[in-house]
Amino acid sequence: MRIVSLAGGIGGARFLRGLRAAAPDAEITVIGNTGDDITLFGLRVCPDLDTVMYTLGGGINPEQGWGRDGESHVVKAELAAYGVEPQWFGLGDKDFATHIVRTQMLGAGYPLSAVTEALSARWNPGVRLIPMTDDRAETHVVIEDDRGRRAIHFQEWWVRLRASVPARQIILVGAEDAKPAPGVIEAIRDADVVVLPPSNPVVSIGTILQIPGIRDALHEKVVVGVSPIIGGAPVRGMADACLTAIGVETSAQAVLELYGSRLVDGWLVAEQDAGVALDGVRVQARPLLMTDLDATTDLARAALELAR
Ligand code: GDP
Ligand code: CA
Image 1 (cartoon, rainbow, N blue to C red):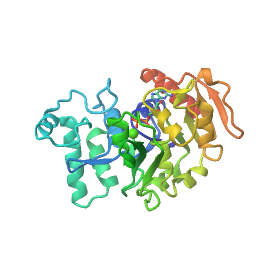
Image 2 (spheres, rainbow, N blue to C red):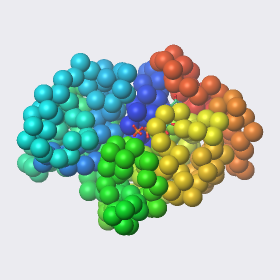
Image 3 (cartoon, rainbow, N blue to C red):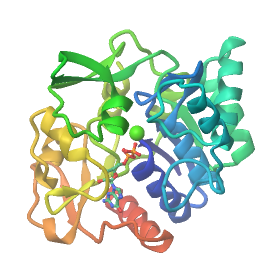
């Protein structure tokens, strides 16, 4: 069986661990979100790709859900001692090594997809991880504060401001000119089923869907997914602030409508959202909390069964 999954960071990566366990013989291709990518201290950082890679490769900080296990922060402290900004983005020493290798390879002319493949070789994630695009397409957020109306990088809004300032607009800068990375459209075309993890519907999955060609390719496939919203709130993080920015209510029903029946064929919601319905979509209620690997594997299995 060939499975394609689209993934953001923590929610995507956790789900993928369950998917890999639920379908051990399947060939799984993961299309990763790169809208969160940012250049810091001259280094290219791809937070969502790394979260997937570290989580599936056993190198993640399990409490935090991102970054490396057993991490130290000597470089960060030294940069701060020089007064170098930004100081709000937490990069650990082991993590720095990943970004150094990536930046070196990009500088040598390799596309991000080739770099990601090379980095993944160390981690053996058990899936093929491809960035959504090799082109630069970064999410920016339009905010309004005492300095007026301006666009800031998604990470500044998410990490520094903790999404506390309302987003007027969320824009994937460069989306129109971006092409899917090599292998993305082919993987979708060859897939028996496409699974959407409970990743952020706006700035993770919504971003991937904005790369020209990806959504159209998905319309031809059986697509099943898992609600990131349970009982009117995100399970973790600030997805509600992203949904509000695009005028969508934070509810399981509204998120399913946002994806729509053209894209989605089957959808899993939490038991308390059992009333959710949309014409043309098979909706089932299941325990949706990815509390441990067993629960997550059951969830992934339910998604695959829904696709049958
Ligand atoms: P990020 O890039 O690190 O923000 O991660 P993702 O976009 O992949 O996933 C974030 C989303 O995962 C959030 O909107 C959460 O609501 C959702 N999420 C996190 N944990 C769970 C869980 O246990 N169950 C479900 N259904 N959703 C979850
Ligand atoms: Ca992310």
